Amino acid sequence: MDQNRGSWYLLTGLILGLAMGLIYTWVISPIKEVDTHPHLLREDYKDIYRALISRAYQANNNLPRAEARLELIGDEEPSLALAAQAQRYLAEGGDNEAAKVLANLSAALQSAAITAATPVPQSEEGSQKTPGEGTPSSSTPEEDQEEPAGNTPSPESEAPPAPTPSPTNSPPFILQDSSPICDPTLGESLIQIIATNGEGDGVPGVALEISLGPDLKEVFYTGLKPELGLGYADFLAEPGLTYTLKVPESGLEVPDIEMPTCVTDSEDSYWGSWEVYITHPN
Amino acid sequence: MSRWTLFFLVILLGLGLGLVYGWVINPVSYQDTTLNNLRIDYKTDYTLMVAEVYHQDNDLAWALNRLTLLEDPSPKTSVDNALRFASQADYTLPDMFLLRDLYNAIEGSE
Image (cartoon, rainbow over all chains, first blue to last red; front, side):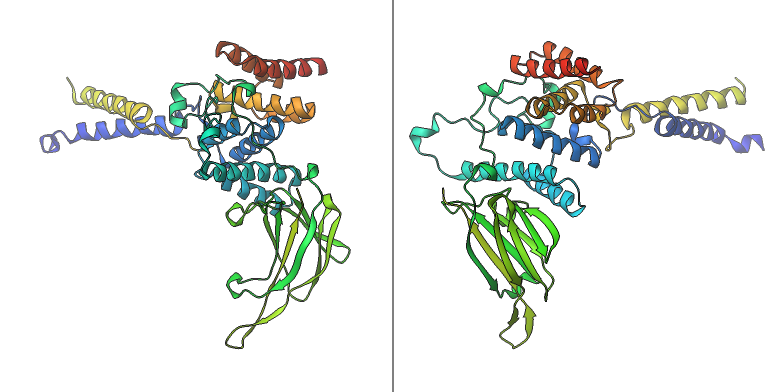
């Protein structure tokens, strides 16, 4: 009978040993992860990291440095990730100031991308530095493994900082247009706000307040949906109610906003939206 | 060699192979680490960001709150570590000043 068992006991022993080894290394004593990279951070820590990068950008106005830092987190579209986080903060009734700071950096990145895509006259090109040039961690996260993020050049040695959108330093906004619109493609009733400057460029980071009678409903900012324009913001309105839009920093008030009743070509009725254009002369 | 001896030797062999596989070839992969696990250069850059904001806002309570997230023994230790690394890694003087400024502020508040 013993001979019938052959060498199976050896295989059993090997499997037993392997199982014990794997349980020990994967469960009981896994490798303690130290010296990790920001892109491995848990999502809530990534939020903290992004928020800190945005605040640091607000403090130093150094866009290349902010871009290099955002690269470390590994978001595919850093500007969208920032905007999404800002929207999340606002939706959760969180820190409005933090949302605004995130939105400002998101808008600055979008502006820089647009500027970079615009052809530059030959005479100016030589004097400009590309974003990320000479920045601490302008390398990719992978490259950064070899080179610490430590060699941080002084802000003075870098490209001129991109202007931070700062509505408080701008002239007050004036109402350009406020009117109902019928657009069946929207699919919902929105109060859409488009803030532009004198040149017609979108202005991000403009604080807006929507109120219903004396009750403040929501505070939000332009630029949180950069894919729809830097100066764009919207609010999901309830048909049948009368809203008031305020631009507190400009003392501007747009009352009596009501969703219109619209009719399609096939005579079906639906609730429309409302568009508000505000601008400030430069 | 008896069957039992051979059996235990094979178990030891399997254990060794399991340890090599679990620790070297295919270790547990962490995707959700904390700020405390960051490499020293990233921790230093994090601390530098806090210093940049502090330099602008002078809000020491906020700065301490952010530094606490690094889970070092104290915020002062975090800035001290950052200063040490920054001097080794040849950070620029303005950045060193920012870190030093934050360090002094924390020390002054104690």
